[in-house]
Amino acid sequence: MLDKSSKKYHQLTPDLIICKILNGMWQVAGGHGFINPELAIADMMRYHEVGLRSWDLADIYGPAEDFIGVFRRRLSTLKGKEEMDTIQALTKWVPQPGRITRSIVKENVESSLRKMNVGSLDLLQFHWWDYSNPYYIDALRYLFDLRDERLIKDVGLTNFDTETIQTITDSNLKIVSNQVQYSIIDRRPEVKMIPFCKRYKISLLAYGSICGGLISERYLGKVEPSGAELNTLSLRKYKRMIDAWGGWNLFQELLVNLNRIAQKHGVSIANVATRYILDKPGVAGVIIGVRLGIADHISNNLQVFNLTLDKSDINDIENVCTKSDNLFEKIGDCGDEYRS
Ligand SMILES: NC(=O)c1ccc[n+]([C@@H]2O[C@H](COP(=O)([O-])OP(=O)(O)OC[C@H]3O[C@@H](n4cnc5c(N)ncnc54)[C@H](OP(=O)(O)O)[C@@H]3O)[C@@H](O)[C@H]2O)c1
Image (cartoon, rainbow, N blue to C red; front, side, top):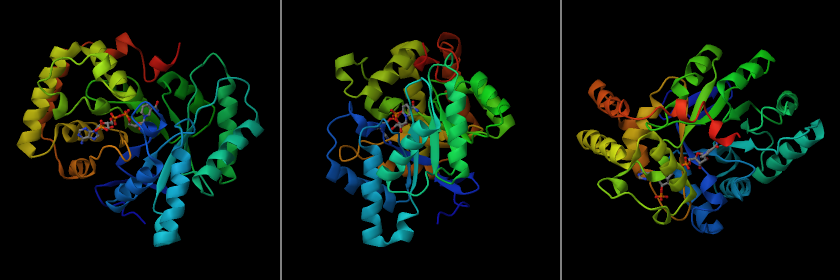
């Protein structure tokens, strides 16, 4: 059982406590280097041992749900069922927008349950990118039916915009969370999403908070990388965000400031960027992508829990951001980049 009074954890729902840093599994889906399944499972054990036990995944993240299933079985064999039950696995369902029936929803949920080797999904985060297709409300109603049957503990969303969440809450569907891109660079949630979520007690799970690793010492003082030099899908995705936000020179100014703050506190640039988003109202957790079996930032990311940013740190970060372009005006609300 996780100790919710610890500063590492957050009570997301009455029956779900998550770690405030969640391990993101998009990175096992391809485009982030070859993932060796054996090394990946061994690495999952290392995250588990230091208390990073909350995983963010999706039905569309390649073998991610299978990895959770294998990992749970291994943990049960090695340490017992009780230990296995200290894992939280937050998956997603990302259907092709179209006619959705009760049996389609049930089949997909049952597939996730089977792969993940769980009796009930901790959180099912639903994604839909075509709001002109109204079947998303049907899909959600069926998901709530499955929640009532305890096949899902709670229903959340990902990349939904504020207006559509309003439609969902107006339909009496009580979602608990929305997973959105949120970083020092991409502050779109602050415009409409956070005030709305505060009113309706919906938590935010943030991703992209260190821009695929761009917000780190690795890129401090470096010339602008070409597309070919950025060797993961994640780096390329967030480099496009930086271009829209203000470009490489302004980004370097931000990194210099973050580095000064990081050195003052004896932590890393990524730690400052993560803490800054974790401290935002309504943010229940920051998802940091993990390249299992390839790269390791475990001990560094744990430092986030001992970091407190002061007023002058926040001012330094926000002063740079006043020089940037407004991504809400350029791109739109949360997730609009995924919609046509
Ligand atoms: N709902 C959605 O549409 C959506 C979209 C994107 C992501 N997500 C979720 O969010 C997760 C996060 O992924 P993301 O793509 O947004 O990536 P991210 O968390 O911004 O970046 C992850 C990368 O940052 C680097 N990193 C991690 N800790 C570091 C540290 N302390 N210092 C320096 N570098 C560090 C690592 O790069 P190296 O491995 O190269 O060292 C890691 O692969 C995904 O796995 C997924 O679960 C959801």
